[in-house]
Structure formats: C-alpha cells, structure tokens
Amino acid sequence: MRRQRDRHQGFTLYETLLVLAIVASLTTLVGFQARHQRQITSERAFWPVWQQAWTAGRQWALAHRTIVDVHVDPNTGRTTFRDGVTHRLLRTVKAPPGLRLLPPAADLEIRRNGVSTAQTLWWHSRPSGNYWQQTFQIGGALIYVAATTEAP
Image 1 (cartoon, rainbow, N blue to C red):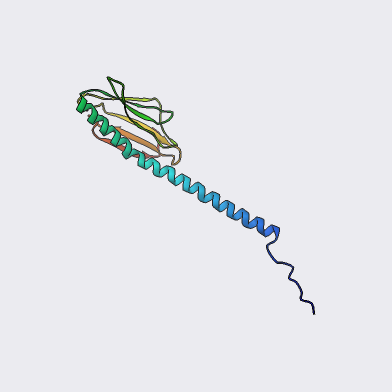
Image 2: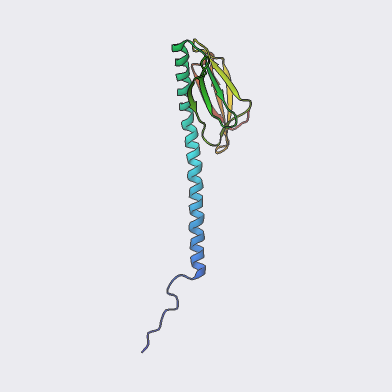
C-alpha cells in the first residue's frame, strides 16, 4: 500500500508573498515611528543644552569682562558662541535635524556685565510641526521655551 503524499508540504508562493508583505510593512511602520520619536526626543533634549551654553557664555562674559557674540544660523540651526574681542570660538550647539530657526538669522550679544536684550526667537520643528518660542527675558539670565502649533 502506497502512502499518499500531502500535496502541500510548505507555503505556496502566494502565502509566502503575503507574509513577506505583512512583515515588510510592519517593519517599515515601526522604523518610521522609531525615527520620528528619536527626532522629537532629540529636539526636547536640545533646549537644556542650548540653555547651558548660554549660561556658560554669560559666565565667560562676566569672568573675562568681554562681550560674547552669539550667532544662530537659520539654515542649520547651529549656534556659535564667540569671544567678541578675540573671536575665539567658545562653544557650538548644533540643532537636531528638522529643527530650524525662522529667518532672519539671530545675532545676539551678551555684554560684559552678562546682560543681553530681551527678545524672542522662533523655531520650527518639521517632525512635530510645532513652533518653538524661545524668549529671552530682560537681562538674558532666563530663557523660556514653549511649544505652540500656531505660526508666529
């Protein structure tokens, strides 16, 4: 007596393609979600770093009785802190990808006494769609950052 062989010993081509399509779409979806979440997390981590660099610039101005020039490039979001007399680079803070300063470029100044003018900078986040309002209070010692969905 001959044993009858099962005709389906594995997946058919259709079943294999269906499983591959499902796995590929889930992997892509999870990958995009993770990337988006990393961008938003790096954006939130950027503000304390920027604040710390500003505070260090104020301390430099006070300790060396010199002006500190602060330039924010609107194209890259890169912020540079330089000694206003020697033009020595003190610190650079790079904005995360997707976060840009709205034009015009920001040229700020921390004076010898650690004071700067009150002003507001606006940043736009592509990943979240938020606008970040960075407000410098009179004297420049305190900086507030708040997210909003409305354009300036």
